[in-house]
Image (cartoon, rainbow over all chains, first blue to last red; front, top):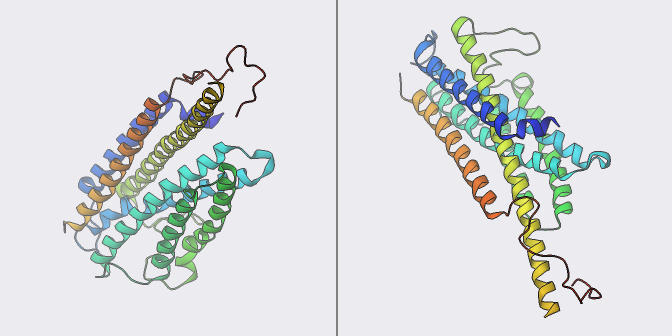
Length: 245
Length: 56
């Protein structure tokens, strides 16, 4: 029901507009309004307004993909919509993981002096990227739709095993990467004032963007599914016409 | 500013916009290929006088 409401054309248009306005505001505040922090290379701190929100969406996307996979595997809730939802969310998650790695790499170049370091957080995030690329590849292996969906759901659950490792990597190992800017457990924040507001706006805007992208990817999957069914029906009708002739 | 930060913003925004445009374009193209809901454009009923034929 909720999925149908978000998926309606009007709701998606409103969501897209809000996401776009939020993005424009985040970029404007992030690049031109917020102050430069002491101790960082010139302007580097401004990456703060996009890098953590990108990583946040990555976790949300993989969380949603896993939940949908579980709902598909559970016999009582098994429905192709959960398979489509898992695939859509994982694909958007992969885009955001790639962007998290790129923005993190730029941060590393300006702060640590290197584009890449085999640090626990960076390495496990790169592994996560590859795992979900594999998941998307498994989704494209031809086969009976139900078998493909079940296989993909299991692969999605396996890929998700790396998500908590990435999330807690900074706490578990002595990492080159700094600790969380906003500690969700204690509520302690290392940014204040306009920097904090811009960061919050970044989180909201990127989350809205994720929902919009995911909804469109989901619609595309449903349409492709319908297209496949129509193609099958057309082929059957053609065979039927040949048999009658 | 160093230029790295702006490059980071540009990469992120361009990627997201490109992905969004590709999704909307693919969705529209798929929608165009499909007949309106409820009509396949193909008559799936067996023709009259051949009702004893099994569908292949």
